[in-house]
Length: 368
Ligand SMILES: Cc1ncc(COP(=O)(O)O)c(C=O)c1O
Image (cartoon, rainbow, N blue to C red; front, side):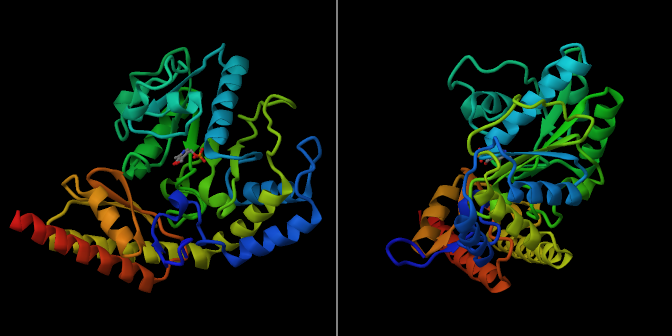
C-alpha cells in the first residue's frame, strides 16, 4: 500500500531486499519481541541473537566465521580488507583483487573501485587502486591479470545491477580451480543472489563450488539493514579490533535475520522459489515471442527481459500508473526481483499488465 492509499504490486521489493514481501509477519514479530528485550548493547559485548544467527549461517553454508555489517557495501569493504590482510600475512603483501567489468559491489570508495560500472568511472577520483578488471565468463581474461600482487578474485555470481548477467556454472567452477591453483582467495558477492533468491540458499551451490569469502546483504534482513561477511577458517585473519562498527550485529536486526533464515532455508520454500522462478521465466519468454523482444536471463527470482530497444524507463512509468512496480537497470532491460513468496496469481497479474503496456507501446510505435 502506498502513502496515498494506492495499492502496488511490487516486483522491485526495495531492490531484492524484501525477500518475504513488505512488513512480513515473521520479521515484524521478531522485531517486536526483540525490541522489548534489547536493541543495542554495542559490539563491545556479545549478544545472543548475533551468536544464534552466526551459528545458523555457519551451519547452513560452507563457511566458518561471520562478521555482521549494516549494508552490502560495508560487508564487501570488510571482504576487501580481509583479503588484503590475508595477502599481507600469507602472500608477501599481495593486495590486488581481480574484479569484473560490469560488476557492482557498493558505494564506498573501495567498493566503487572494485565495481566495473562505467558510470562510476569519472566519479570521486582518485579511486582506490588494486582492482584490475577481467571479463565475466572469460577465464583467459582473469589469467592474464594474475601476478605476484594478486591476492584474490571477487565477483557476483549474477551481475544484477549490470542487467542480470549470470556467470555460468562452468565459469564459476573454472574460476575456483584457477584460484586454488594460484593460492588466491575466491570472494563471492552474494548480496543479491544469496538468501534463496536463485532457488538455493546460496548461489554457489548451483555450481557445486565453495568460496573462501562470501558477502550477504539485501534479503538477509527481510527489509531491515543487515549484511554479513563470511569466511573459511583458513581465510579468517581479522584480529579483535581490525574491523567493527557501532551498530554491527545488534540484536534487533539479527533477530530479524534469524527469523528470515528459518523461513527461507527450508527445502519446501527453496523449491517454491525455483518453481515460481520457472513460471515467471516461461511467462516472460512468452511475452518476448509475442512482442518480438530479446532473451530472458537469470535464475530463480532474479530475472531480466531484454527489450532490444531503449523503452525500459517508459515501461516502468506506465507500469507505475497501473500500480505495478518494475525496475529498469539499463535503458533496454527490465529486471524482476519480486518477494520470494510471490504467488503465481501475482506473477500473472504483473505479466498481464506488462503485456498491455507492450501492446499499447507497439501500437503507438506503429502509428508513429
Ligand atoms: C551485488 C551487490 N553488492 C553490493 C551491493 C551494495 O549493497 P548496499 O546497497 O546494501 O550497500 C549491492 C546493492 O545493490 C549489490 O547488488
